[in-house]
Picture 1: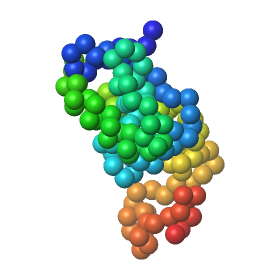
Picture 2: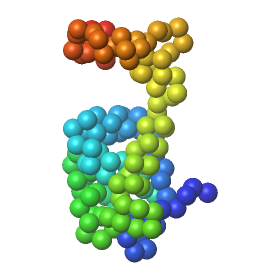
Picture 3: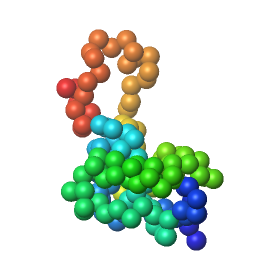
Picture 4: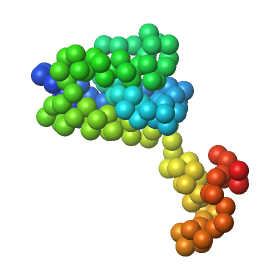
Length: 143
């Protein structure tokens, strides 16, 4: 049985990532613009059970930023920003990690970090003396 969390008085729920790759990617992209709203969106999208925030992602135009703001407002309205499991942010970080783990394999993480088998990564010493500004494209080639 999944771990039960509680925020506020009697608002118990468990976390389960959404089954949509697209939604997870939208929340991850939103995290680059506003971490609080993205974390709140992750929390709202992962909440399951009677204590979940009764908001629908679709009702917010499939916009992670708008949905995250609505989740934060709903938590504030029901005085559920804190609970025995910590703050909403503590639980939201767990939800966000669950979301990312649900769609990103360990191999993808290593590839994104430049640590795939057979790849050589620069040591911190050599990169700190480099004359370029470190900018690169998503595939790792110089910008």
